[in-house]
Image (tube, rainbow, N blue to C red; front, side, top):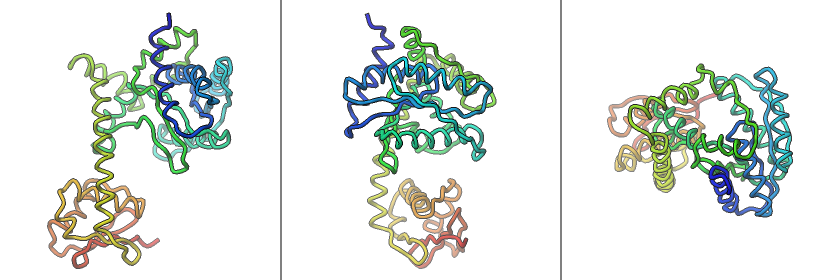
Length: 328
């Protein structure tokens, strides 16, 4: 009888691959840990049935002693599963801290490898537990619904490459059970036990306390919350796009937004329009305080001067809020 954990992972991967409309191979991001190893094994079983080639790509960040050997072991397991496999060594910078820098380097290398292979999608082994941790970290940062919606099960990047997380509905214990049942030796990354990292503290300290004090099912509840917020946010984003088309117009060295139109909308819409304009036109990510200062040009106008923002400024000129690029 097929082990339930293997059946669940295969079913999830089969569903994700079947939803891909574009023919072509796929890449599996393989670290050698239980999550990605279960994903690779499930993809090796399911992809050929759907007429797709699957390739494993292991990224060696070079941040730990023996990382090259571990990467080769992961690639060897992928080959034993019938996957094409390669190891890519990356240089990790320092922008945004070690976790963010390693993630940026990893995703850039996966993207490049996918393009070289001609892959139409990259499969990533995040689980429901990862989703719950992401939601809690977003909540702690106070970064709003956009962060609390967590990781999308699938998204298409600007180059048309699909990034898919087939295992978001599975618990981490299930991927470990998969590996045990399949006779696969998963790697335990020492960094996953390093309490210097916020995600590790959430995993090892915060979630267990919540489960103990509030009862079981907290991780599932957080994942459901992310899914609901993602649905709401997507609908909201569509509405904002339609609103912006109606109330924005080009201005010299920037863009102008109608004050009466902003004033007529609820604060949630008004603030999203302000953030969207700043980001889409000037690649500026506004804090809530900055957003509210711009909104005061609409709701509490007392002759304030221009407001300096990242990469741009906002000023009220007559019945318009004019966003202008900052001088270089």
